[in-house]
Image 1 (cartoon, one colour):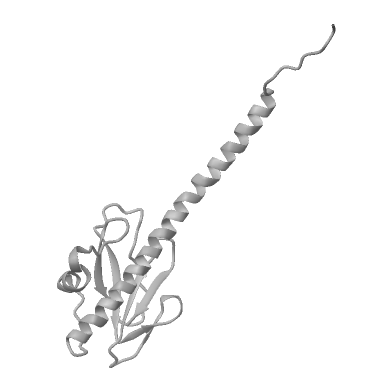
Image 2: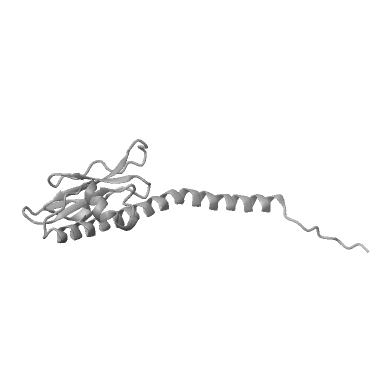
Length: 160
């Protein structure tokens, strides 16, 4: 009997092709992962700004409409209630800094600066948020605009 037998297995070209495709998939995942993490941290920061906005409204209600002083006592009393933390997703503390006028914040989150001790939240009293983090001044109003420079670029702005 002269029957041909077929050998079981893969050729070297098939193995290399599968490894190349797997390598491309892993490469795409590792390239996209940091951007996804950065966007997730920025979303958490925006949520923290909304939380600060709510705390400002609560503090103003408790003091008959007077705007609170945004200092460590405000953070302790209104933002760290029941053991909650008010920290940046990267683990650094938020710090409020006054920013006069409608000037845009030029500093804030700096992911490359490991010496940075906190993340700046800029506030402008008598102002409301507009487009792209720009504030419009409303002198005499009881509004506070909170702005934060995001890690992925841009500025998050909320007001009470």
